[in-house]
Length: 142
Image (cartoon, rainbow, N blue to C red; front, side, top):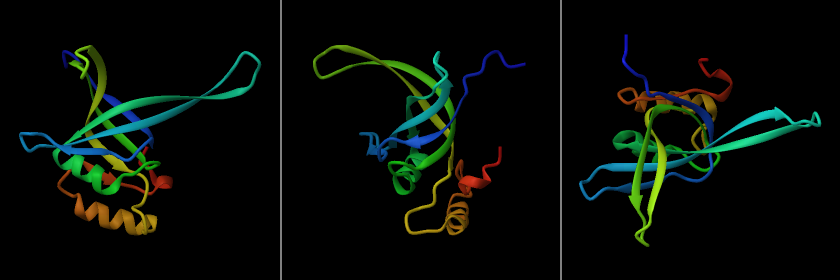
């Protein structure tokens, strides 16, 4: 039996285009803002939406895929692990953040200019070696 488990599963929409950059060591990294929304009933019986924002970090090939195929509003399913860290901002103030380090990425929105079925075929063939899958939104495997 495992001693511990650090796993996060999210399904949501991007709040902005991925922020792609290359580290001084030459590694590709993309920071992704993902929104998940849940619905609840308030004390007056009215239905309300509550949105949570998540900071995703994708490295190497997953970062490049995010750069090439994701944009604001894209729907994605992702899995990863939580990582909390601190850093010092430009004013020398210590800040804390919690991120999800992406290990799996399923693209649920077709690439601009493609139909959903075209998107599934081309993305799936191109990403056969990486941890990426592409499904039409109505055909999610869960």
